[in-house]
Image 1 (cartoon, rainbow, N blue to C red):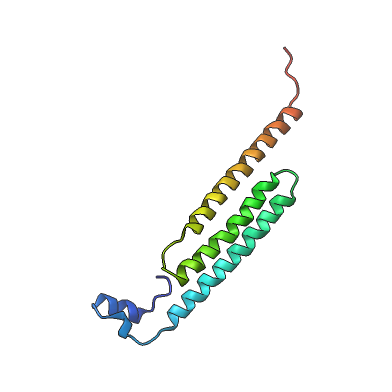
Image 2: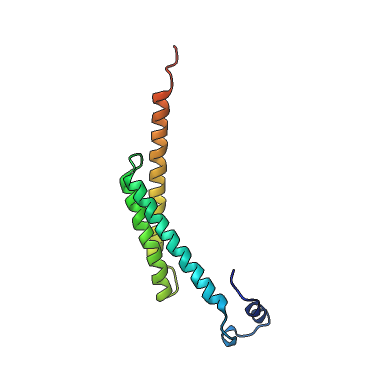
Length: 126
């Protein structure tokens, strides 16, 4: 754990019950950093999806899939944290949508680049 306090680490190595230790700010700091990371990733992915939707070079629906995936992923993390603590299927569906959308955008960009290179390439003398 990146924010684990040395006192907790030493207690764990000594075989002590960690529930009996006094509260530490490390847990609060880890929670704050994780929430900030989720919010920043969510906002960034929504903005990326909107940018893809508004671009003329990439497929609009790939951007829409990206935004849906951006909604499913943090929803799944929060849902899992509040219920079972396990990863719910929404996270896996969101990851799959990101993969499909990313491949779709890459494929379209590759095709557009290939078409552009054919248009600008001079004809070979036969």
